[in-house]
Image (cartoon, rainbow, N blue to C red; front, side, top):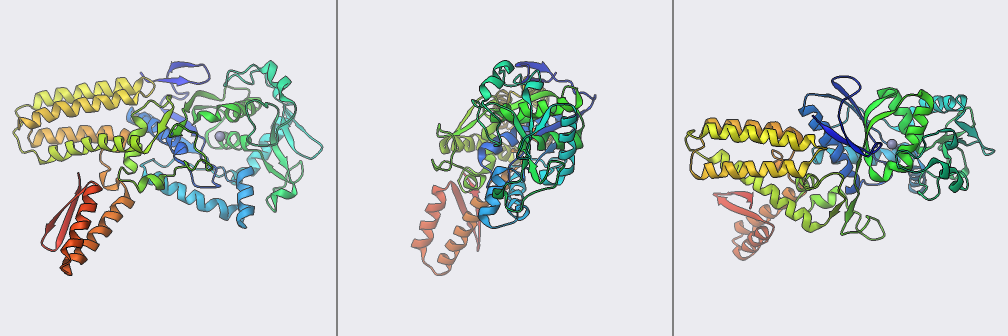
Length: 470
Ligand SMILES: [Zn+2]
């Protein structure tokens, strides 16, 4: 049985969705004011892995990932860029979907943009007002009164009694820090700094606060109660706590059954930031020899609740690990033995299925599941060495791996390993062939050496040049 660590109860719990076979799942998506960095992608990869595993075990997953296209940052960015909010955010949203494809993240059933849900958001805030949880201030903004919500602070294990006392006022910013708790904005009154970004509401012109966007979209698209809510651990407080307060204040029912959070990703032991110059995008990784599938693989080599320290060396090491899997597939598809060890092979595959399920059921223990995959590969490599794997066994093994790869999504993705790297190789080969045509063999050899240093071996077959990654 699948067990998941629930941030709300701080224990591993048996997973049982509200409705027998369908899982309603929501992941806080990106704020589209800039390129999305690899820390965000580590969370989306975790969400993708869980969804894939739920599918693997037979659940139907109804998942939503929102797009935050209005908040303090998107407004500021669009005004600075001299673009409309829609145009400004659309470009980053487009790049985001493109990135998801590059790392084999399955598209969510829905990707709602907050600006399309203003009507629902206003309705939501009105309901909070009716229920006595919201109040308007002199400037026209509307705030959530956290003292009215008795379990406020529970998700982050904070004491509600002290929250209000420490608050020292209301927070209008979407990004207030843990040490200045307080009532948070549901609706922000229009100010000149918002340019022409504003919507009409019963409280005057303004725009929604960030937290209410998720609550309103979840209610509209998934209902009052959902099974799983995912985000980076930096969202536990205040964002997710505020989502709970808003939704439960309207519905009176428990909002989310399982809260799951992905631990931080650091780069070179430091928090990613523009000023430190360690702000990495998928594009940066795609340009490396290791490539993007290595990133996908790297993410599962440690547990999602362990902070991950990303370095270029760790990416390279991941690529080497992944190459072992690719080498195995190459050997397997090339082997021409007999099938005399087919029973043994079948036993290994069954054992691997058991180990995979046991590891993944244990709060997605991916490092353990990866270890099981490698022990299978080692065992099978030994039979290949003895030339005792024939076409029937090969078929069974490939079928087994393809099934498991519905969860991993990197074993049979070698071709999409890294499109930019691939392009770079092809450009070099074209250059080299031009040198050869011109009989400049010194230059041609230099390019061959350059390719070798990138881990690429080439072989000339007539006028054609074949290449492979070592
Ligand atoms: Zn959210």
